[in-house]
Amino acid sequence: MGKLLRVAITLAVVVVAIIAGRWVWDHYLYSPWTRDGRIRANIITIAPDVSGWVNSVDVQDNQQVHKGDLLFSVDATRYQAALVELQAQLQSKQYAWDLANHKYERRKQLTGREAISEEDLETARINTEQAKAAFQLAQAELNTARINLQRTVIHAPDDGSIINLTLRPGNYVHQGTAVLSLVQTGSLYVTGYFEETKLPLIHVGQKAKVSLMSGGKPLIGTVTSIGKAIADTNVSSNGQLLPQIQQTFNWVRLAQRIPVDIQLDKIPNDINLSAGMTVSIFLQDK
Amino acid sequence: MFEELALGGLLFSPLVVFAPLAFVISFVTRQILHVSGLYQRIWKVAWFEVALYICYLALVVYLFGR
Image (cartoon, rainbow over all chains, first blue to last red):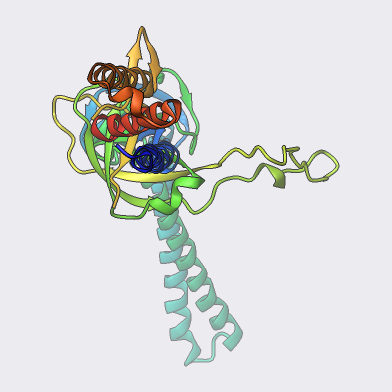
């Protein structure tokens, strides 16, 4: 074997090794995968539309509910009383309007005979209009009271599971303050936090393999969107409104992580997925 | 497909397995070359062996780690 051939074989192996080593490096550093993925879901926070104490809680923690199911009810006594009060007020306004109208009709007949002035008639007419407006106002208030009474029972806005239910009968709940949350059924998706260096390799529609931390068969998903913004810590300011700039090293830079949403194609029935679980995500190369 | 290695609750990179595997393959190759007598004829043995090891590692990663 000639010397030239021996040299050539070694050099060839070295060249192949350089190419292969480069490929391994790229594979680990730039292929679009992340261990920083989470299962997420649409969470609906449920707040009562009226204040009051809770009379009954009709669901249990982690219970599956359907749209329209009764969740809990707020004590309605006060709202019933308000309804009755406004009904009486409506009636009173109705009579006031009748009376004003009656007076006006009577005065209309008197004008022909010049028994009352034009101004008196006009006043009577306006009084009637005013009584009518007062009646309509009372009607509107009654309607509001009716809505309030209806809203003392809180129904599930969608199919889902109750999460972290700490509400107990007797608790006082405030209007607009959320007291329990609901995980919408079938809304589970995955968000992967990918380093920005890997973003050029990620595009919408790409297939993703999602492995749960608990193991088992990986799930298949599709990239639906790539986050367009993350918070920049340099824009916050201190008590004197001076910008708080983070000090960094010149040559060591940490890649930011960008959220990428992945829709799961099919969730097998035998897998119990909970929002918040940790997953590893591997996107298929194109 | 082989992505991570769980040992007693700690997760390791699959390279923890791939690197020794590549080493074993290159060791076997070295033994074969030695027995067949080709070993003496290689120019710059150290270069050759390191390069061969990297090639094997890439091959193992390609086969099991993708």
